[in-house]
Amino acid sequence: QVQLVESGGGLVQAGGSLRLSCAASGTIVTIKDMGWYRQAPGKERELVATITSGGSTMYADSQKGRFTISRDNAKNTVYLQMDSLKPEDTAVYYCKARILSGFMLGDYWGRGTQVTVSS
Image (cartoon, rainbow, N blue to C red; front, side, top):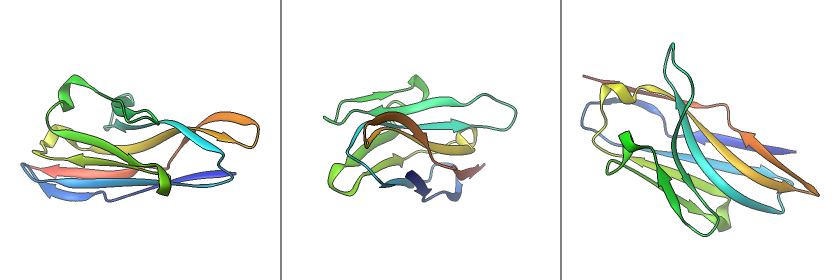
């Protein structure tokens, strides 16, 4: 069994910053790609950023220059540093990881953490 648990969400004013964390636990052989997604009310879930096990990153255009994804492989944890937050960044943020657990490779999701940016 594998679990992903996000933390770090909350309420922040526009222009402020938040740092999200997502820790993976359970029967983990190795973690490949990790990423952050978000879903705003009434909208589909969308990609925010991803990072490979080697540290290569990719960002959605709307987050380039404002968000930074990183990971600590020793801690099985991925982070999302969010700066210059805007009200349109308000959403539930989900962590996703591709994990080899035992002999099975699968995609796992966290339950999400709410980020609310006030204007």
